[in-house]
Length: 311
Image (cartoon, rainbow, N blue to C red; front, side, top):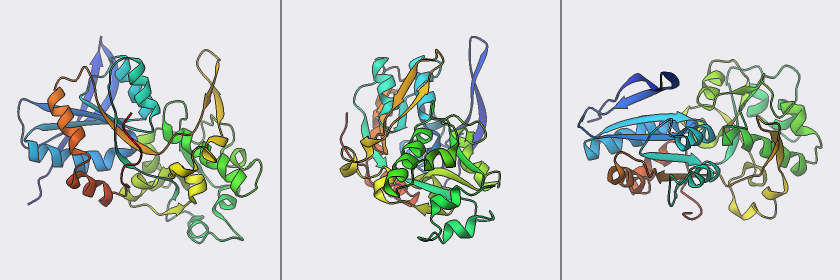
């Protein structure tokens, strides 16, 4: 028998300032203990509809999930504006933010994914993307006038960085100089950028025709997508040093200082926060994510097995 999960809006505050609006998902097996898991926003479906409820049911605890762009969430956790038990990130970068703050120890790889181009099945460009050929490849369709492309903020979300790397690699792979700028415009383009948790929702609503996506989140959302070769989808560690690492980009920070971004493997890492209110329960959840049951849920939601090592 399946157990339903009750979700209600939860506003987090500190010193009278509104910090974030999250959905607090409560297991029916309510106890005094409540596990709080923060995660990369693209993981909302698998976390709040799959892994969180399953763990809550078997451990008879409450589960509360909060998703946001992984770098933005890491910064909130590092500043202690949000307190949680576990953080699950895409790519090592956001974990490094917490390591520099002295808030985490070893991070465990728990799943992996690859970059894809998701699209709305009702878009006027859908057939072209579904039938990408040598004569009309996906990148040529994305370059067409009138196509609305969506992506996330590269300064706060790894996915926003990864689509830039993907398009820069596509320039080299398909021998199309200037392709990335033709599709994206400027690196920071407000007409394209949306919050990670809302990007696929915008795509489903028809507000954009196509968008960057992780295969995992795109499959979870039941959206069609274009499969990209390993040379540009950032999924294959064998390509890291000799191919992926050949691209980078710069963005100025708030102080106007240029910061260089480089690709990292599309692996999801889980880590216990050192200021976790429930450290033993938090470690149990991290261990659970590599169990056969959790890996089955990951697979059902379009995620691949974890790659790489703990760090």
